[in-house]
Length: 105
Image (cartoon, rainbow, N blue to C red; front, side):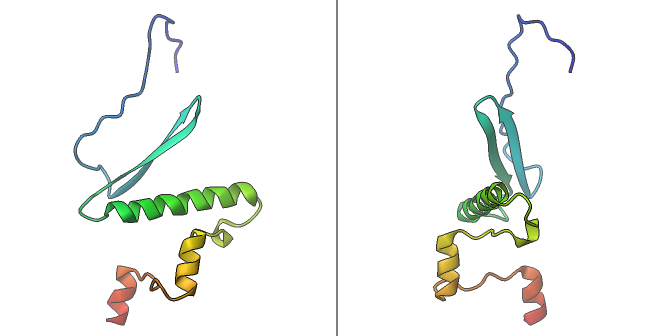
């Protein structure tokens, strides 16, 4: 990036264009106070609770990476403790993908 005159005050602006460019997008921004992120998603495909769970899984993965930097990503957990407990106790059925449903239906 070229040198910019100190008289200029440059800031990134969040612009909502009313529609997601992609079905699911994670935008990350490095700021002085830390990295900020947001999910932008197609509301025809995802609802807010699904995105909230996805954000929880992303956070769990990042925490696991920091705690176990030498561990293979495929071995790191995605589910939060309440989700693990819910699946173990049969409270929540195991999620299936549309692809899996196509072969079992």
